[in-house]
Length: 165
Length: 165
DNA sequence: TTGCAATTGAGAATCATTTGCAATTAAAGG
DNA sequence: CCTTTAATTGCAAATGATTCTCAATTGCAA
Ligand SMILES: [Mn+2]
Ligand SMILES: [Mn+2]
Ligand SMILES: [Zn+2]
Ligand SMILES: [Zn+2]
Image 1: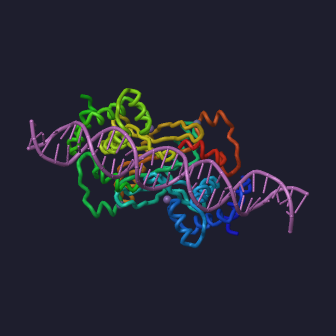
Image 2 (image 1 turned 90 degrees about the vertical axis):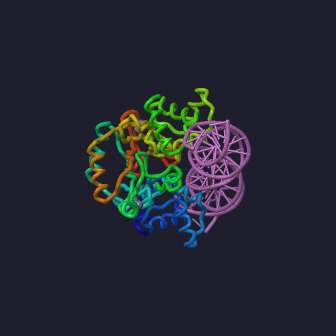
Image 3 (image 1 turned 60 degrees about the vertical axis):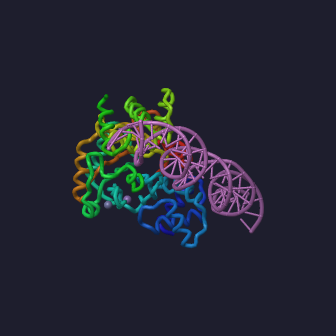
């Protein structure tokens, strides 16, 4: 039994929930892949793997994995939620390229520290946070000399369609 | 003509877009209200005000207001986008209470500065950022001694229903 | 005033996510 | 191992926010 399985079954027991084969499959699916994912991707990956289970089951399992501290939701992208590991992965924040969709992860201890200070100042007890910086990645800046007036870099229509995050 | 109207019509002209009565109504609606809002709220506010226009028109206008720097999208909340002023309002980030939904705005220059540093480190050209810290506000901490085991403060079912942000 | 691309409203279409329901099953207790 | 029962599942229908289609209208540059 992996450390994941052990922790998950402990969580389920504490909540009087059942460790079903489906949940097992989903757990394995989540930890056999180390990138950001969304429900549809996970579903298709499991299917290709020959597993049979429905989207609804995955949707219903996601909150369990969040509550038990395995994954967390990251920035919504075009109305769709994505997730990433928490368990076994250090916390980090994201740079999001609005041109190509590339996601760069970073961690800045000083920023984290200052966030705590802000919370203290307001008597706020933080549970989690998300910091996403949207802009243009190195490669996209290099590829195209981006023109445009004071009003932005894309037309509205283009921005709509290409809104990567 | 207000400064808003002037700036907006300038933007529209530059983009060869039209200053329609509907867009005018929406612009006024946005600037007659100084809090976070979503499309539905804006729609109903305008309706109550006797204005006649369709949701679709608002949805279509939102990207214009974003591009012209009047508003920006803030954290998605339950799959629904919210917006807040940018023009005439200083940038800030948010503390979000996951118990009562309260939103506390804050600004920390040092954090902003460090974000720029991070971007430089990655050759990334930032356009905007969002920092949201989710947790429990002062009042909620006071009201309820929040119990719970190591796995979190709400049950899954409750969390689903009460997920304020 | 004209010409035409941009815009609008209404409703249909999308798309991610949630939910109702009947059948199934994990797992606690004997 | 058997019983009991609440939890779980799959499927399809329901939701809800947002986008799109299309015919009718209109701003505005010339
Ligand atoms: Mn990440
Ligand atoms: Mn705000
Ligand atoms: Zn890029
Ligand atoms: Zn609160």
